[in-house]
Length: 122
Image (cartoon, rainbow, N blue to C red; front, side, top):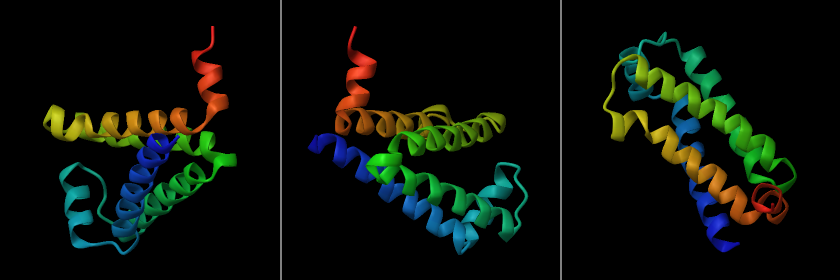
């Protein structure tokens, strides 16, 4: 249980940081968006920040954690696709979303006995 909470807490902390810098938006956010081919408007950065924050908030609460995990998976899938499109380094950039997704679902499975029973019982 505590391992799941720790993994989920790390994911939540990362998403708070990621969403926070997009809500401001810091210069590094618009520079990075430009490098991966996204429009560099502050409105788009804020929209991505709100989507990430909403998904993380849903993930943090037990009653809505499954929906949050699904939304975070979609959000991370978009990040992976963006990195693949520009030919970013595989293990450090492209697969970072995969690593985080494994933490999302691993943390949720470890802290939610009903989900664990559903996925692991035969």
